[in-house]
Length: 469
Image 1 (cartoon, rainbow, N blue to C red):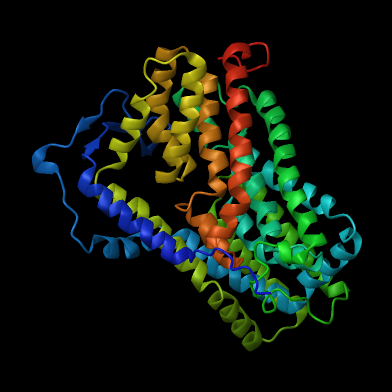
Image 2 (cartoon, rainbow, N blue to C red; image 1 turned 180 degrees about the horizontal axis):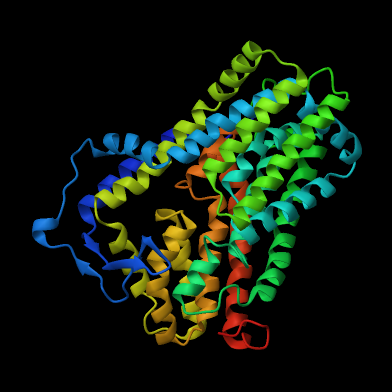
């Protein structure tokens, strides 16, 4: 009996195909743009002026050269350089940490304690990672944990899909229900004229509801894989190299010290991000320091440390390339001057509808916009100046308009192929995009259905449930 052939899409082929399709769209979609003004609280960013959309003047229209998709790739890599460097440098540091044996010793101890109860690991990860996104908009910071969680999942007789789900499902839900995320909800609330963090208790309640939906999806899949390994969506993918535990998994004093240094580095960054606006540059500094201190504690020679770092960074090449290619999609749409046209067209469909229909329509619009603008803050600056006055016209409370933005931006974050972050980490985890789509697609449908119901409830009972404008 022959094994059933599995559907697979090469991630790089998919991304470059979308780059080409984006360029083809620039030849048929009318070029247009919104007027923009500096955002008062951050003049380096611009926000759209409502009602300012106009077609690009004939003399200002562009026609992209046939080879523009190729030139957009290096531009995309330049635009995504911070995340690309993050992947390379963190990959090298993680390799050093694994060479010390500390990471694998910790994993072995954790598996020994949690191996019979995977729900504890899955539930714990969903809560921790969602709170990181709910509070300070964490996302890129989770990348270093991908190889660690995959190793842990494999040791617990699960698979890499479960490991990816334990990170990107709570990441998406945390952004969608965020209460204090400065890169999403706070920007959207400010544009909508709402008090910062207003309605956070309701959003925290939403977080619990959606985490329950996410947990059910991830946990049921994990149990299926544990019962029947052949049912894994990545059963044919080779994880024998790079994710296997070493022979020596003793938790020695040196290894405990290395783990403490690693934990202090992560905690220090979280504190710095929430109090001093630290971002990727500071994260890289901390990781490099952690790697050097770990090498010193473990007694690794400089040559061994250098070779290990380079090997770890080299293994991140595929993920880094996919990140750059994914960012090229936005480059092409911007260069072709059609992003504003697409957003204006889909937003216009909501005019003249009732509040409940308009709220659900806003969710659909924001979800579509997230394909073209996967950046949460970028989407807020482009769409909220349009959605806020549109909400007034259709009778939708401003808090609900913000919530629709959050849902549309957040939930699809775990799935859109234009997200350099997700596509890069799928490559890191050796998961073909088609397999991830089969896992996360049904979950996205569940989340969006619940989100639509919540929006309708918020339209009619917003004051009663603590979501007053």
